[in-house]
Length: 511
Image (cartoon, rainbow, N blue to C red):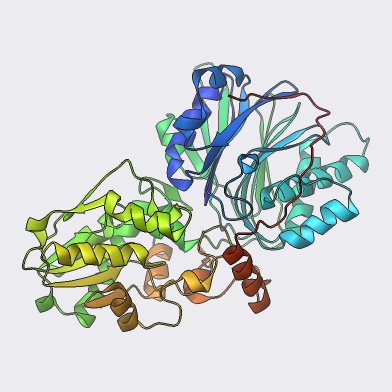
């Protein structure tokens, strides 16, 4: 997952972008970047680390302009260790374009061959986001070539996005700057990755516009959340601040990612009309009924969350079962989210630094631990060991999500079956693997019903990591095997050293 944010305002946007990215920090802690547009000049600063680590006062001063985009990254494709793959990315023609992308493309190899071999464009990194940028650039160039070849209109932009939708498969929420023109944003035809429109009406009647991965960004900036972008929709905010929008996909279908509601999104966000917090509360009710039938009330003395994401589900589950709710683990808030840390060794080491059990809450009790999901099982195993070492008689584990059995190819870092503890195992076998006395998982149908009840307009879901069904229709066994082999070897999608020609002036400010 990554987070994207774009602003077209009537004031300098550097500080607003910085503040907004901090609200999206949970979506990526590997790298951060901001690009601003001042007339026809881009200013950019990006680097590895969290937002507060990447940007200093001197960097912020140099990010001039009233329009800009920002990105926080955790890697799902390409080289996780490369600063060059921090976003936004830049291409010089046509006009000069900056782009930031949340999601993952599934036909990157095909697109790369078309971009580089057929259209003679240069891709400088192993990132699918840079390939996506070049696809957009080519389609914009093709569109203006069909007209006068010099002037770009909103209609040209939307036509280019429409052709991009036909070429690109996968998940993408995109914000982009076009030099001399303004801010473009668009969402994939299934709406797998979220994208939200916000606005701020100034005292003089002028309107500032923003597009972000989550609505919480706008709450923090005192902007009004207007609506979610529809699947396949594109919006363009011109340099004068006028908003244009168009549906650019032929057969759009709203099918958001279930994992956004389970884990990734902040609880104070609203995604596709669904309160993430309320969804997690309601997950606790359906999970409680399954716990009642599979474990029984007599076996449980106390319910505890694995902080923080599972807390709403755990509290509602405890209330529904009439069992005491206790906070048995104290969280060190200065350790990053273990699910998005690269490498099992780093993840395993961080768990005991991140959570500390209070022995008095465990001693002599049967504990039901509630977590949002069980993915690799590394964290769950360590937590069960800590609970038993603290004196628990029995430890049961309940997951607010179903078993994660399949790779996700749309932007979540769980790409190989070998890493998934539920792959080929029953709930009892998973319990044995993590050392628990029993495991209970949410039913997939129950989870989908919880969210659809809050917005009946949702037609389907990206539930691929639970069901093995991939919306884009291009994922087969050879694809998954190639993905697994690439992940195991640590290889990037491409290794393409080279230089980028900057024909439009771009100022990238380094430390």
